[in-house]
Amino acid sequence: MDEEGFFYLTKEQSKRFSDDLLASDYFCYYSYFPRWEGMLPDGKNAFSLEYQPAEFLKSQPGDVQKCLRAYGCESYVDMIGNHKAPGNWYPMYSYATSLSDTTEAGMVYEQINEIKHEWLPRVIMAEDFDTAWQEYMDAYNACSPQILMEDLQQEVMRRICR
Image (cartoon, rainbow, N blue to C red):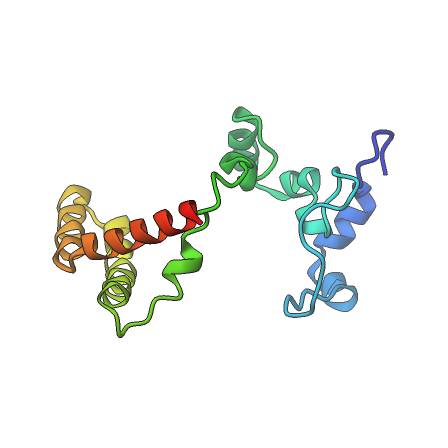
């Protein structure tokens, strides 16, 4: 721990941690065990070494470090920010993921998810982005997303007015 209370690895510890043979003998990365996640109560240190901001940053390639530092960040999450929930209607995914495919909105939700899984990888890898994006939008609009949006808006209003 440094003088400011942050956990860190010494060069020797870092070398051992990055050695695959040693890591396989001494570390268990089985992520299905119950565990604490996020920051520790001290507000400085992460629950696990690989999430300690300074250690994470050191483990990244030079160009990634340069990019993160240019934005004043130590991790990808820093680039997203940390904002409070905007209201009691948030998060809407808790409602959307509970929709049944026996409802019209639920069927549209399923169709939208299928379209995203099929088309977004194509769009990302397309040589002609604009054409691929238009094809994606055509498929997306063909499933009548306004039906889902109207249903979600009703749920937002229900949550706000309760």
